[in-house]
Amino acid sequence: MYIGVATPFGTYFLDPVAGFVPTPRRFLSGTLASFSPSVLVNLPTADALLPGTYVWFVVVDADVNGAIDGTFYNYVSTVITP
Image (cartoon, rainbow, N blue to C red; front, side, top):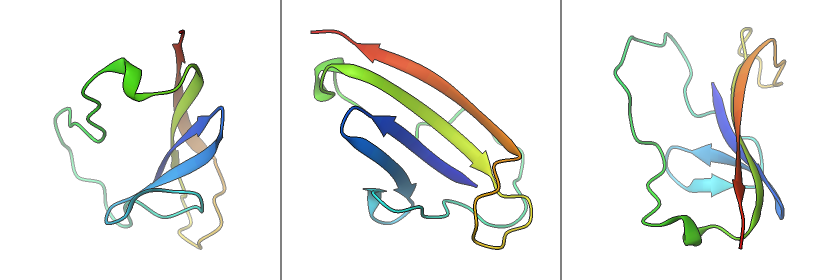
């Protein structure tokens, strides 16, 4: 599973150790257990983000070969206005 965000200044992937990085990093590999809502990114205020459109996404790589196939994905857009 890959988690990322497309921003006005680039696309970043969430690395479980390093945080957001510019190259694809697998966030999770293996069986995804059932879980309740979780906080992955904690922003103290919306002005922590520059104005623009942010597309937050999750992609499941079903064959786990390291190439993101994108068969299963979902996303949500957030627009920050000045």
